[in-house]
Length: 275
Image 1 (cartoon, rainbow, N blue to C red):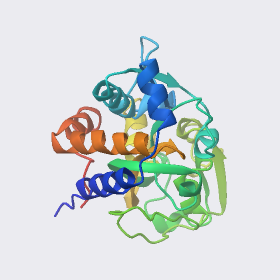
Image 2: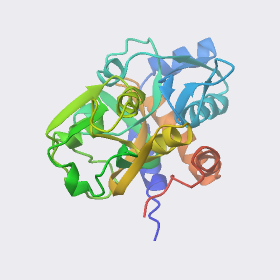
Image 3: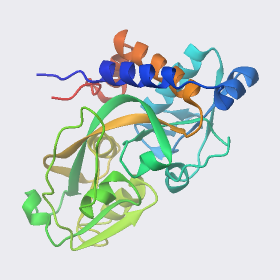
Image 4: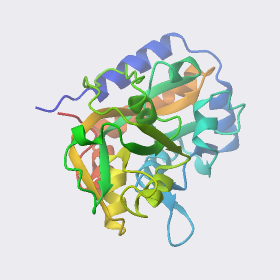
């Protein structure tokens, strides 16, 4: 049975923030300039990537474009590193992150998460030549993942996902060594060199692994997903009006089926709900 938490999340966030609303510097800047600036990753397909026309494309990019459209402004995209985005204190360099970010307790100290827009399964993958067939066999292995992300936190057994609607999970793998990378693609590049050449496995979003396989990477997915992540639009702290507007728009996109259609376009399935 599917649990549709997004409407409750968006409505609750909107009600809370509307009650606390104050003059919004970010919202004023966006509306007066006619431009909404979003941070993104150029190497995170199918969420965000540079297409053959050298333009940003992907699920997250389409979500950002739709948010800007409903605000009545143009979308601009910048590509700072993930560590810089999650550190907060953006100082107006960009206005929001639609970057498949999990709203963890640690991140909530420096960022706000006004609207969950989809959920994604986190999975392990090995080289097609690997004899490893179960998650248990990954114990003690060298596992590659993105640095400073939720997959890194999971491998360090320090992951806290406290967003409403997040399913519970257990730590099923104890890595012998965790090798971190700037992007998931870099981890895939090392694994494609061969089983155990640099890493024994990678840990990433299942849709990202599947996209890599579709693009010729010799990977195979192991077992069931380790956990499901609620993924949210992120904003810098300090503008409740802007957060309320984001929550309102994303709530509408859930209700009218826009997010479902975008998910099916990029993933072939509806990831806007979880089982």
